[in-house]
Length: 141
Length: 124
Figure 1: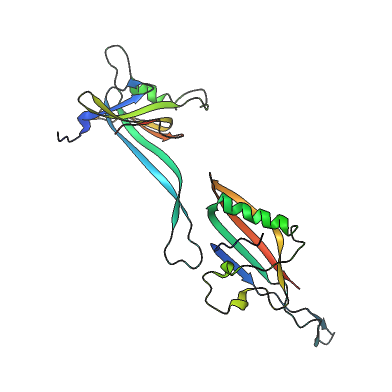
Figure 2: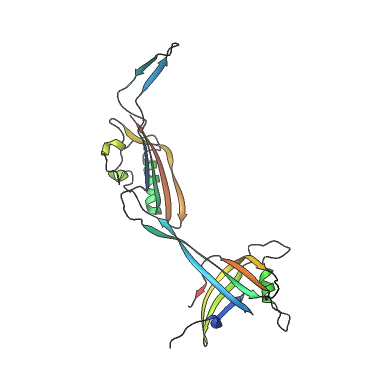
C-alpha cells in the first residue's frame, strides 16, 4: 500500500526512551572519498574512505504531568557541572512508524551542542546536535 | 624486487647540476673550474596517494633490497606516467642511477589504504 511519511510518523528515542514533544529530527550520513587519480589519467578516480553520521533534533521544553522533561534531560548531556567522559554516549534511534512496523536508524552518539531559550510569544524549545561514533547499529528503513 | 611499477599521484623533478667550483678574485672577476662533464645530483620526489597497503609495502621491500640508500637502481617507466616530453629529461642523466635520499614514508589513511612518499637522488 502506498504510504507517504510525515512528521506524524516520526519518533526519536534516546537510550531506549521515546522522547516527548519532539518537533523535528534530522540525520545526515556522509562518506569521505579518497582520490586515487594518478599522473596520466584524465578523469578523477576515488576509493571509499570513512563514513560519518551526525544530525540534530528539536524538543519542546515541556514538563508532562509526572514532571518528566525530555528536553531538559537532553540538555543536561552537555549543560552539566561535571565534564563529559568517553562513556557519555547516547543510544539514539531515529524512527518512522508505519502501523506496527518501525523503520529505524540506530546509532551511538555524543550530544555535541545544545541550545535553548525563551522568547515572547514562542514556546521554549531545545535544539540538540549529535555526532555519531562508530558504525550504525541498526538500519531498518 | 625492482622498484614498484605504479603510476605516481605526483612527481617533482630537480635537474641537479654539473660539478664545478667558482673562484672570485678581489677585483670581482670569476673563474670556474669544471670537475666533470656529467650532470648529477638530480632529485626526484614521488607521491603515491591512497594506494593499497599491499602495494605500499613493496616500497619497503625495495628499500630493504637496496640496503636503504646504499645501492643505486633504475626506475621502471611507470614513474614517468603522464609525461609527454623526452623520457630522458626527467630520468637520471647519463651515467647516473637513482638511490634513496630518505627512507620511504607510509601514511596510513584508512584500513587497507595508505599513501607513500619516496625521495630519490641521482648519483654517478
